[in-house]
Amino acid sequence: MKHKAFILFLIIGVCLLFAPGCKKNKPPDKPDKPAGRTTVAKNAPNEYTTKAHDPNNDEIRYIFDWGDNKTDTTDYLPSDSIAKATHAWADTGTYEVKVRAQDAKGALSNPSDGLEVKVVVNQPPNKPSVIGLPFGQPNIRYTFKTVVTDPEGDSVRAKFFWGDGRTPTWTNYYRSGDTIQDTITYTTEDTFMIKVIAQDNFGNISDTSSPFTFIVSAGAWSYITNEEFISSPALITDANRVTGIVIGCSDGYVYCFDTLGNKKWTYPDTANWTGASFYSSPCIGPDGTVYIGDEEGKLHAINPNGTLKWTFLASNDFNSSPAINATGDRIYIGCSNDTLYAINTADGSPAWKYPASAEISSSPVIANDGAIIFGEESDSGNVYILNPDGSLRHKFSALAPIVSSPAISGSKIYFAADTLFYALDT
Image (cartoon, rainbow, N blue to C red; front, side):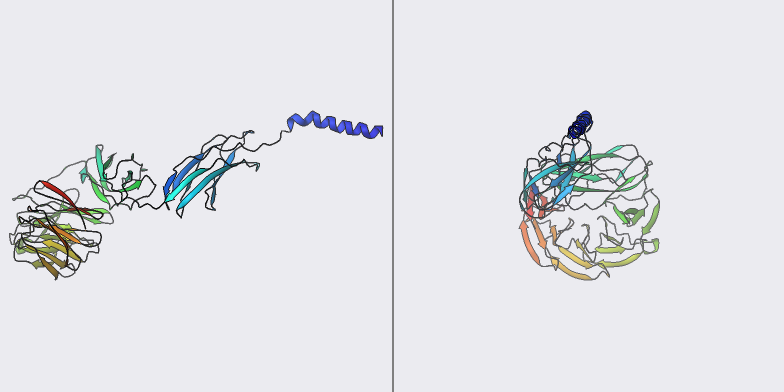
């Protein structure tokens, strides 16, 4: 009996001797309450953060419970490091976000305090566009802008994609409708396609803008004609690369240059020259076709190589620049004979025409739903909104001649007449 007691006493002594070297693993402390937005938009990704301490200084991973029967687990991080996770809720409602920490030995912490998140229906900002110079030189800083509007009037920010591979960054937040800008310095000669997106303060992201072409060239160039240029240039692009710069001249020619200033073609060729001046600016179709009107009432469709595709003849001069619809199968142009024409781009045949009350010298614009908007130079200052089939949807009188083109943002039309600036719904 004494022998057994001695053995038991010896075992207890050995355990007590080595106990300090056999520490019990403790689970991580309760993580901090998650930090992040408390009101978010449905289906919009948002980031949340937390951190925790591990008594044994073990690495920790974090299990985010989003309150919608979904969880996300991070990689292992050093104790006291900030953990991040992103989530988008598919349904509206109120959710409680909690986090647990787990060390490398599998020990789990208690859940964190919950963060209440309200998920609401919210629309993303309207599709923005890039505003800036079309040409520049290397190693000079240029500013590009965008105007971002949000359907609910939420605060918005923008991110410019510069087309040269660099990582884009978000701007600060601004009020809906404010001008947002960012700057860029290119170091090489090339043609860059700049795009921009917008995000509201709920995390919703807009559609990406159409590409804006910015040509960087070290050497400026010029071309001299015998008559003045009144027309503005337009760009022919192919796979987001500028392949031609087109401009009409009052000498009766349309010129096309490459980005280095080399003349690619002149339209018409000398044998068919009529001397009719080109005062309006060209527009370019999706296939690279150039559309431009002259002072004798002829609308010209010019192939990308400078050859004639077709012409359409009206009874008076075209001072208005044409506009082409989203599908590229119809072009619209106003004439000095008080008529807006819709022309089929395939063959130049008229689709329909709409009689205004006076000369149309400003260019039409096309809304997202295909509506055509233009103004006339009468004292009534009528602004017409036509359906794609040529029927009248709405007419507004500004009581002063309309000589400038309207602008469209979402469902709003903006235009000026005399001393007044207007905003109308389409």
